[in-house]
Image (tube, rainbow, N blue to C red; front, side, top):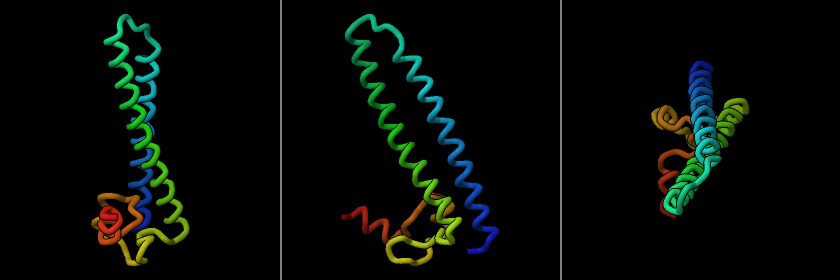
Length: 115
């Protein structure tokens, strides 16, 4: 892949990481604020429990995406970015523009999802 394209994808990944870490920090601050308050009744406690589970789920997804972004940045540095980890075909640029941390081409991703 051309150096210009790699730098464009690196910039996209860094921006995505910055946005994601900012969103994660905001959610964490909000959770700390909400869960540090006294709970007046059982209905409020049930609502807090559901909110806590939702934030944990969002947090898990965010952390997974952050890990994928870091791995994509490493693949850029190693010269392996844009190559499918399964079949070693080039990942189409359209896919990388939508999901810059993609490690599989569309065909292999669909096959993995079927399994």
